[in-house]
Image (cartoon, rainbow, N blue to C red; front, top):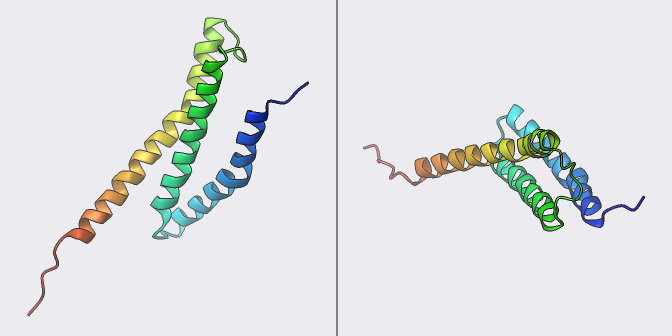
Length: 114
């Protein structure tokens, strides 16, 4: 059995970077740390990038690693793997919204009290 170099490299980054960063993000949310949405944005973007590379690589080689039966392909390969695109996508949008809201609040002119 020969390992796929791309998958090994991608999963190494997942295990050593995204895993610990996900845990730090979780802790940041528990502690209401100011960097929590920045961490959420970074982890979500990294996950989406890996997902795009995974799907693009598979499409480029003609879906050879997927069972061609429609139920398996659409149910397992697309739908189940799609969760790994949907959830980080929603979390990325949430992080952007939270950060934009905070920035708008920060940018509002301050009124001086007399």
